[in-house]
Image (tube, rainbow, N blue to C red; front, side):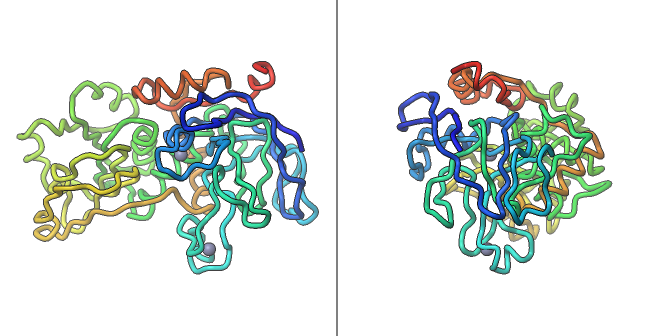
Length: 350
Ligand SMILES: [Zn+2]
Ligand SMILES: [Zn+2]
């Protein structure tokens, strides 16, 4: 199947239109016309080869919402015309203990990324959602509940599940005391989801400038991490802190905020972090942990939860040909809080 998308040809080049082929339907494949695609920080990193793992051309995009246009002979869960979604994964071994327990993101044999990974069957490099069509095996397609706003649902597929999964894993519910560090695409979803789960939510930020925004997203409290007295008073007062900051930073100020047995969970890619004071870990049986997106079943649970509780990301809609400008604005954190590409603009911009 011929399709069009936007691709980076080198680490230095801007994204530009690309025509390419989507594979012919395998028996367990679903063909999807993409309606909306969210713009994630990973898209920028992969386009620019920041992680030294990119194979060009890179067609980014792993927050995909669309409509089924065809199904393979053995597909049983989806029908033509249905609204569906695809997130960060399009395949895994389906055979290891992680896959059997619905945690494909921790597949022992490595899951297949929605873009930039070799396909498990033919070895071709996968291309993501900055395109008109995608073909994905049935097990990695999600149902979009009818009551969920299609135009705003896309960021749930990465930003949503990445924050929902740790909230669920660490048992957040009514009365849980949750802290959120960072108020970007992920952080603003962490606030909304934790509030919807019934938690008492505090945004932790280096300055007071984001307080009004935090409160408007539903946060109950705001803690300025540069305010030494407020930080001392907040010691041992959190059951879970989700750290969404996507760049290297000092974890030391945040660890003492955790109560006994509580966890600071990293969802960003920080790499080596030097100089973290480990004493508060020992003295308070506190934990520093990490978490990667979420499994397919949990992603479906999150979509259903968001539809039921009317939890939606704050989105700024853009045209496909505005993507380079959107990348530049994202680098300056000049977005509230997620860009979403209206894919109807793709044909028009050719
Ligand atoms: Zn992402
Ligand atoms: Zn597996």
